[in-house]
Structures are given as C-alpha cells and as structure tokens.
Length: 162
Image (cartoon, rainbow, N blue to C red):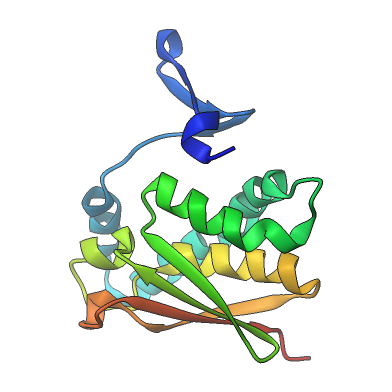
C-alpha cells in the first residue's frame, strides 16, 4: 500500500499519521532557510545533525516498510514513498558492492539558498536504507547537488570501510 493511502488525517487534533508515526508538512524553503541563517561551520554541524536524526528516525520508518516479502522489495518501497512524501523522484541502481541513487527534484537541493551539497536528509535516509539492504553498515555520500548547479542530485551508497 502506498504512503498516501496509509496516511490518516486526525483533523480534530491537527495531525497526520502513518500507523503510529506522525508526519507534518513544511515548506522546503522554510526548512532550508534555517540552515542558510547559520555561519558555514554551524550550518555544516546542523546539517550533519539533521542527517543523523534522519538515520535514526527514518530508519524506524523504513523498518515498517519491510513486508513479509522481505528486504528485497525495500528499495522500490522507498522510491515510491520518497515521491509520496515530496522528497523528489528517487531511483536506486546497483553499483558494485553498493548502490547509486539519483534524485530528481530534491526539495532540499532545490530550496537551498546556499551552494550544496544540501541533501543531508537524503544522505541519512540512503545510509540507513543501504545498511538495511546490504545487511551491514553503509555510508551514503552526495556526489552532485542541484544547489551547486547539477541537473539532479546523485549519491553513492557503499558498505562502510573497516
């Protein structure tokens, strides 16, 4: 079942839920404007904290998407859910021991009023999903970002180096 079909609007309490997980809508430019107001060192630290929070909380969400069919279907579910959430159009492809991820229309990169990389939230989600799919700790790296003039955002997800 697609994310938007699972989403329940609790109108009396002003909330949206997917099961027990609460979601909210926020304008990407408002979110990225927070980071733009910080000096470069503080911005980097805040964006890394954002990434780490997504690894933790996004991992909890991703774990709910693993169905009885197993982990093999997770990448397709994540691609569909990212689009339903407004996180752009994701496409994973197997590359060597890991994955490549292309994101067309990233809300983070498109709304960043500073040069990228700006998609730390996607890096966080790609890291935890990579860890789940590869069955070992993974690391995601943004290699191209629209905030720096690229046509689309690109990421590499690889097993962590020991």
